[in-house]
Structures are given as C-alpha cells and as structure tokens.
Image (tube, rainbow, N blue to C red; front, side, top):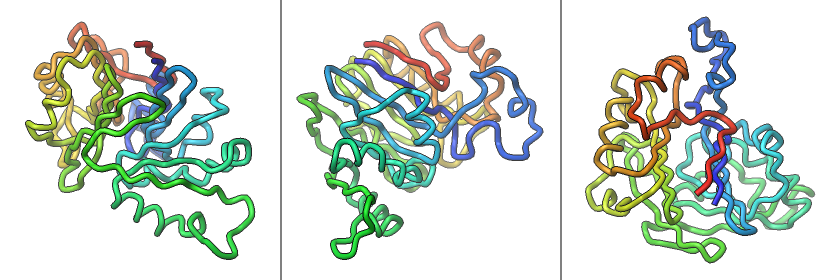
Length: 253
C-alpha cells in the first residue's frame, strides 16, 4: 500500500491569502500546504479521501489519472469543494463511486444539485454512485475499511482504517470504543492544527498525547495551520517516531 499526502494544510491552506506571517512567507516547499487529502493505493486500486478546493491541482501534481472512488470524512468545504473536478475521471472512466455518511451525501445533493438531476441533466456533469457509510466496516477492492467515529467539536466526522494504516482528520474528541479500533495500528495519521488549544481540532499537545495512547509504529501529523510553526523547526521537537506530513510525501506500508 502506498499513501500520498495530497494536501496537509488546514481550511485556508498555507500561505493564507494576504498574510504576512513568517510561515506564510517561507521559501521552504514543506511550509506550503494545500487543503488536506490523501491518495491511498493498493494492488490496482486508487481511492482519494476527501476532494477539497485544491483537488484538480493535487491530481495533476500526483500524476493521478485513475481513481476508483472518493471517500468523504465530512462535508466542510475544505473537504468537498473540488467535487466538480471529477469530470476528467468521469469522461475516461464513467460513473464515479463516492462513500460518505448519509448527512454528507445529503449536503452534497444540496450543494451540487446539478450532479443529481434525473431530467435535463447538463451534458458532461459526472454521475456519482452514492454509497452510504455507517459506523461499520465496508469493503473497497477486497480490502476491509473500518470507519472511526470522531467528533469535530459538535460535528460527527469519520476517520478510516485501511488495514495497518489509519487516517483521522478534524478530530477533537474520540470515544474509547472508537479508540479500540486503532489497536496494533502501524501507521497513524492525525490532525495537529497549532500550538494553542482550538475548539474543534487537536492542538500539538493533544495530538502527541493521542499518539502516545495509541502507540503506532509511526505517526504523521496533518491538517496543519501556519500557527504550528515552521516545518523544520517543529519536526526537531517531535518524538522520534512522529513526523510532520508535508504535501507530496509518499509512504509505503
């Protein structure tokens, strides 16, 4: 299995438009972060978790010409706003499967109503195959996927376990029964927004405490804001098995 970090930034990305913050002015490519997403590939399968507003460029940058579907964590714009850029995949492949909580599917139907028309549909608009996710395992390409229910302040969000790889973003609290799903995980990706506390995201201390609780072989931090600091400086203070993810990073399991 190969995982590509398509984007590792928070909802505004880094740099933020108009910001003079030193991290936003950094020349280090690792300090430039598109909105958060990963491409997960195994055997002949390719699935993307979330397609935010940077989806088109992310696909071009990753040289990705085929996807088997999109899996959504939740409906916030930094996770869904690239949906219209599925068109090139639709033209080549046909109907595109999507996987999401029923609440998220309803939100997509509202925002992208033209996708779901059954009469007088605009030519070229992708047809999506809707698959509702509940908090129970499902299968993609013969691989068992385990949803992990987390809370983003008061909003339910799904993380996902792909065998030995788990991806959780936008988490603030995780119930004990959901934490059990991460037992013996080898690679954990978890959000760490900034240094100071935040109402709906783990800050760095909370993320590190969670990693210590789970004890994966390796952990990667994502959904990062400029307020976390410079990539190279933050990496130096992290435990030896914890890494700041960065855009275009590829890991193999």
